[in-house]
Image (cartoon, rainbow, N blue to C red; front, side, top):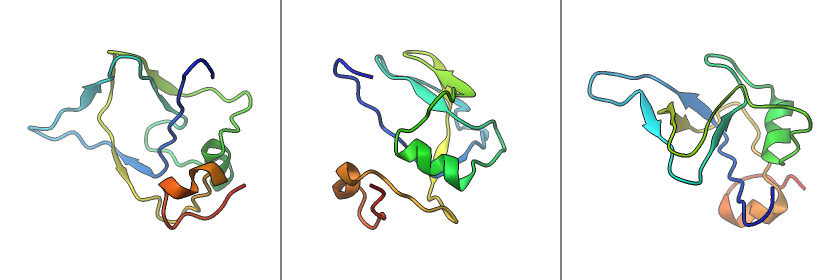
Length: 102
């Protein structure tokens, strides 16, 4: 990443439960891309979740992604119950109550 690109990591449990009257998909804004690193109805390991939070992806590629103006699952993000959230120290002020991850 570079040239003004900003990475935002959302950590938690994604819930996708389209119901009558709720959109199953949403359109990504211009200049935005979303990556999903697990398949639907699967869990991420604690270790990989922490690597993702730290931006240490290595050779891993997203299992799903949607780019600018494309459709993405309209997920609801819930608190990462049962997971340890360890953002980099540079993000501590943005996440009250999170543990310091280095």
